[in-house]
Length: 343
Image 1 (cartoon, rainbow, N blue to C red):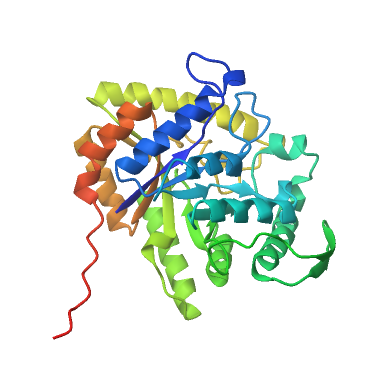
Image 2: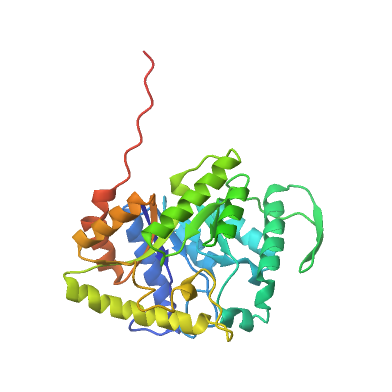
């Protein structure tokens, strides 16, 4: 298995307010340590208008992280395309890819929080169309070194050449957050990598991975199990009581997220809102428990075909170190075979 971290940095820390930015510096320190402990990547969310100083300038913070790391992949999970000028976003992403020596994993999505669409004055029913047009412009921006124009429904650009080009060619790997059959098939048709949600059961994840693999192979594409990342919340507990207390804290955080996400019509979609209507639905498949309990849950995920996990670890650096030392070694990536020597 491969492990990354799934971050939701805040500007404030436990003791200092958001005007200090200490929470962002703590996030950078945390990721530097994660790299040293053997984590493969750090994927960072993008959110707005929450009232709790959640990270909004995702690529800017990841650029700061690029300056302090050497091997850690720098992911977005996810940049919501409907809210961004696609040319400006293409330029920013390419710049991060260059200064990090090609370590950007560009995760994108359509968005789901009602409060964010309302705040940007963008109708949520336009999310799909805006996503598609922005993606078209960004891909063309990265792959074309000649001038072009675009006259679309939402964006118009006249005689532009988008600079700089990204380090990775033809563009950084694109990761799409998907859950429905239609969205998984669309990701496979485009050859994009897949981010599966942190609330689905191992059985459901296995079905989604199988669907994605079949869709890829049906068009002659190679299936790479490391091209599917599964998000999970994690906490290494001393005992069951410790785990239950941590789960209660996580439930409160999830409820807060649901509160800012739900639309007045109660729509759910294929994200946290689709699990929020059942008791403990958002905590049922967490990796909360003793090291032995977590290893059993990880084995269930491995048996379902999960090879790459993005972890939201409750508890800061101490928990990061515990997971790395007490859980990860049992699921370490197998060493790559050395090339055969000529006789």
